[in-house]
Amino acid sequence: MRKAQTTVLKRVIVDYKKLDNNILNLLVEKFPDGYDDDDIVTYRNASNEVVECVEVRTEDTAYLIKVSKRLVMAMEDYEESENEDDEPSLDTEELEGSEEE
Image: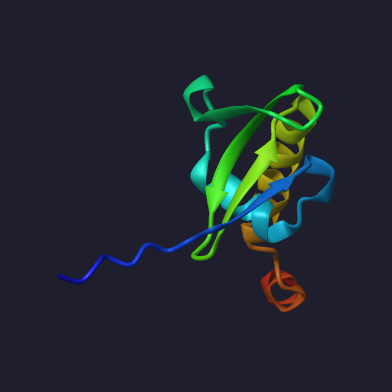
């Protein structure tokens, strides 16, 4: 009988200050309307302090991002900047062509 292979994910704890755009994008995709209490993972660190995180995963890594008010603001700022990039901008040729002489 063959045993089913289990994929071992690398677990990485990340503070909001060290988030890169890839992880922020994963967060915004997973939690487009923000995260809820049910999404929070709680554990005790080496100093026996309670730490709250939300989890996002890639194929090989589970990221635990520490929860704070600043994380919420970083997610909102990132989402706003992504939305601004998606808005079409007017081309100068379009402006010149639309002028009536």
